[in-house]
Amino acid sequence: MEEMVTLWTRQDERSLSDLERLGVFRNKERYIRDNYEDVADHFIYLYRWFVDAASKRVPKPEGVEFPIWCSISHESMLRPILGTVAYKLQIPKSQIIYLDGGKWDYALNHIYIPKDPDDQIEYMEHIEKKGFKDQFSFIEGKYSRLYPEERKRVIESWERVFQIDHWNIFSTQANIWEIRPENIIEIYRYKE
Image (tube, rainbow, N blue to C red; front, side, top):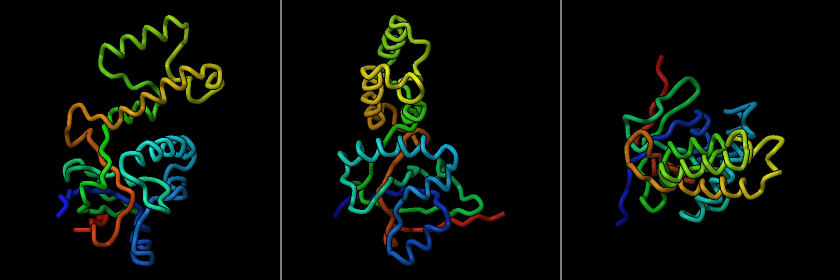
């Protein structure tokens, strides 16, 4: 019998309808667009990278567009707010993609994820030596296509989001591809 892991996730309350009608909830691009509105393209670009990288670790089922972000503890879970529900889930361990949320913040900001403090110092010296004004311009913006080697180096460093150096309930996060009714232990609803 496979080891099961308890996870928590907050989702739009419309996810309940998907579970009832389809027997599965999967994150879709339109949900991300609804949630992030004007900055949705920023997240979708990064989520597409994440889907490609995560699929190499845990194969993505046919029909899945984007992952479902989860907390690994009740203490760190996102509580339901108006228009949402939170799920307490039981997921087979083999279906979970763990990541370092602190490192993910680097990717969200389009910057290099260092291997360690020495690598960070070396990278910043490299940026300065090359005459770059900052480390934020290689992925988006008017200079992004001018430095393909730097762009490649930054994007390749994002693989480190899957390397968890210090496991803890606040920075360690989990992703899954889908939620099925049999995964749900409890549903938390918003209360004023």
